[in-house]
Length: 120
Image 1 (spheres, one colour):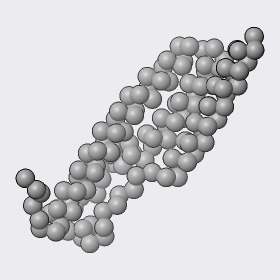
Image 2 (image 1 turned 135 degrees about the vertical axis):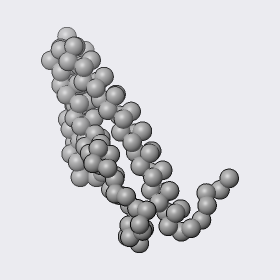
Image 3 (image 1 turned 90 degrees about the vertical axis):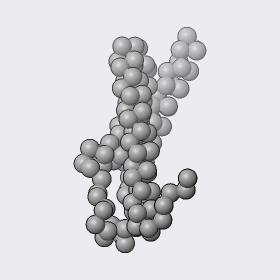
Image 4 (image 1 turned 45 degrees about the horizontal axis):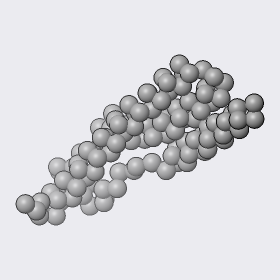
């Protein structure tokens, strides 16, 4: 009985921490760090709406899903826990791939703006 209570408190605490991280990532998110002079170049294109949305919201939503998984585990709803964790995992992969591609796009804009060629 005591172990179940400790596990419950732990799950609830981790859920609250995940919600705190979601609030943090709501405020801190990958902004477009392209310097202003590069934004004036004719080859510069702003982020597509889908990329901007993924980078803006997915990290926060992932932490919210992890918090929900903890709260569902606290109440014993294993199917919902599994669904939240699977969705969070898929969203995390999409977020990371999008983040990497956006960084590559930003570096390409900077290379074109300075006129230098990438090292071979």
